[in-house]
Image (cartoon, rainbow, N blue to C red; front, top):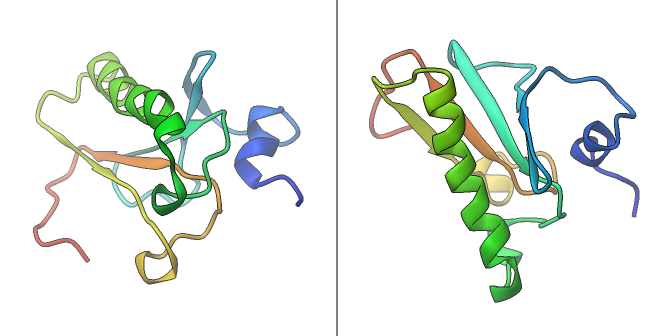
Length: 113
């Protein structure tokens, strides 16, 4: 299987605006932002989607949520933010590499979509 766009970004084969990075994940700006702040929190370990995750992925998945908090504090998103994970075609998942969208700095409606 060929590399996903996120694997290519992680490997520095294609450019991205990186907001944060550590040994387990990378946080990049979405190229089609849906809010003034729209980041993608991507694990370096390939997990195809939430529905295909296993107990072995628990630490990596937890780290993504913790990283969202780290980045939110760094960017002073005290008014709030939303985390979104798309899983499967009906959820508009377009890249087979799990990632979390962090959206902020605009009023987000409920229910979404």
